Length: 187
Image (tube, rainbow, N blue to C red; front, side, top):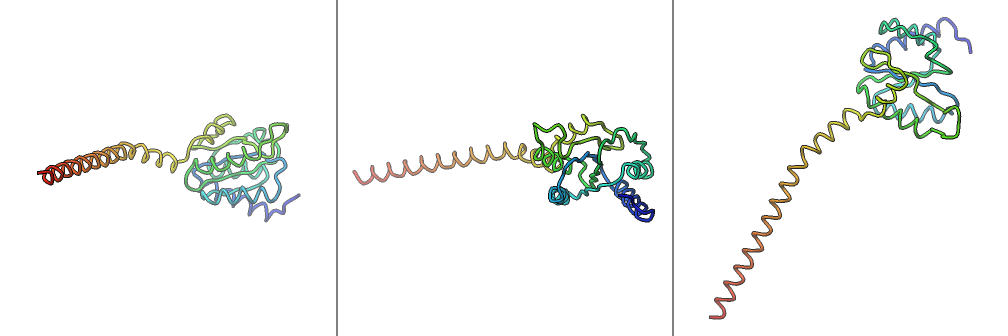
């Protein structure tokens, strides 16, 4: 569908603004996503402060050049392209999108509903393989929770040990008191 010049200008400005404010950007090719699946993906991405945008490849190329001074070869963008921009955590949205992609994956189909094409991560354009590797990395929050868990593990073990030792001492004390009481009663 042809866009008017004013609409193209609005879309381009929106893309430029999103690209400038993004910590990372992902590009996916979409084949047969339904409207409800697209909305499902948008809602998943909103949870991690990311947006899902569909646009023409030429507008994406112009916006990327203007916002981040990156030249993008349009041959790297096959089929219909959608853009996912993250405003905060550069990896959390990738995990969400990756989970969605895996959920919609059909092992038998030649063309999947949605697939990674490339990404812009740390100011560089990454290919499909690098994008898949980054998408499988845990988010910052996940890594922090794992760190806290590993730091808490020795403390928890020590707490359990001290609790068991206290119970053992208490049982020994009760046994000695019982023995003393029985010895006193038998005299």
